[in-house]
Length: 465
Image (cartoon, one colour):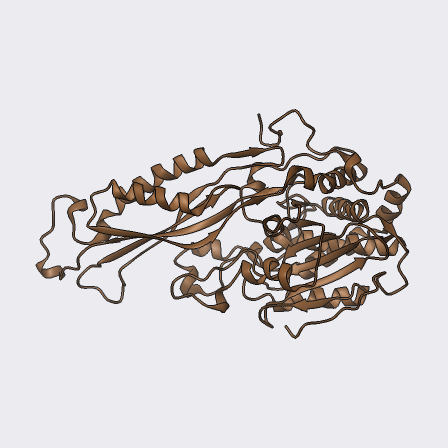
């Protein structure tokens, strides 16, 4: 079985289960309303706004201003004024299901603080322009991590909503268009603590509770190479500390074996071997296969801390490993904790401790409840790309994406979108069309929007943050 095949003989999605059957005429009108050049320009302009985690304010303001110009009644909802969620809306003129689209404003990137980045990245890696810059290359592909992850898919659903409005097609149910901070990170760890280091807690999670939204379904718009999955891994970060005894270097009696050294840094070899062996077992035992996705929870040592380079002369009494542990749906952090402790107890160590520093479990939608949404995306994909929807590659169901937030709370949610790596303008236009057709297939057709406004009867209240 390859990565895109479902685990049983049931079709991945049934287009007939979509709440509203979109016609060829509607498809043609929406496709004609998508301006590919406008979409690319929007993605490039938005993508070239610096927006590392904790620096999302300018990109958020850009999205707010765009929504306001286009008549999508934007508002802000944020835990801090510098890192707001932006919420726009379209439709709501009749009775139909509500659909929420979300994408994140922050981009995978070094921090920009060389005093920190130099301990993680090579200097040549730090100089890669794709971390923060976007452009259309000579081969006709869009370059830059901000577009790939995740402002390209964001631009696609913004243009999708505009296309519906431009085509004069209203929605009976409501579609929320949301741009969130902090999906990538960071997390409060050790001395890097407090609200300044919050990531996911102030993004889609905060939006769900405080953003004034009530979706029946949700889509995390991210690159999936046009596949779809309704499962997602979570993760835990475990700190494993091993302890020893500080010894003034001039009086140190160097042992024959490194593992007999009083300095715990010398004992890392057996500890790493034990964690590596346990991690392989965890990955094999945690494989989670369903029709909605294949989750493969991976394990990797993220960082090591031991001693202080400015305070040398007696070695160190503490050395810590920080271990990232993937959590497939149904896997609990407690099980990983007990197994790591058991693996450590097999070693000849003076003492150790294990502490979960971060815990975010993985989730999946109920297959029956998510069927109308998956069917709508399938129907949209067939209309836009003349091909049935496929299950996304396991990598896309083996990571955290914000559909986890909604599935956590019982709202059927999926992640789906354009090619993840260097999409073409045609790819993006195809993705925008799929999103627009999905909006219509889920929410149903409502009254045509008035010029310059959405068809919603609700106002765009703006919270202080």
